[in-house]
Length: 259
Image (cartoon, rainbow, N blue to C red):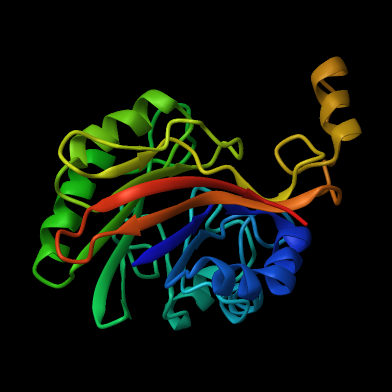
């Protein structure tokens, strides 16, 4: 089974790229399932039911979210109706939305969840390591494959999660920093790992935002809007080629696709 996992979708440019190119990419590369982080999909911050449905309609099978989960007004009232969208599992239990997903592909059940890191991150969340262990324990009896995401600022916290879950899940990947790391590999107990998948959006940017506006903020410190950029759009992530019998990957291929 080949699973394509995509980094954070950024705004309209990222969504438009998926709509135009994802179907052909899946066909050409024999992709069986697509997972994407959608927390920046609406205007570069947060997501709405409309944008989530647009992404799913483009060929994405499951959408995970991150620290911007509630940035868009009224999304807290919409998320419960979105069957293939999950919010971070270590948010307070009072938060709406699913804290994990189980989807079926090729006769296999795939469990998917994400946790927020706590280092240099804003939301007050439960321990991501304890939460991940609990979710995995729940999913083992219900699924054939488990894919875990850590949406976090520091590489150290992401790597620690990889080792924490090594041998217990098929894949651990990181998101949030929008810049892909070159460390895609298989850990010693068989779990696939990559610290950050990058983003699906405009590379001629500062993390998907307009260069001049972001640069100005760094130079003079004055507040200003940083709209989503529009140039050199593509999708970044990885393709995980899984052995369906063991549930562990044969290989991980880092991708940076643009046309």
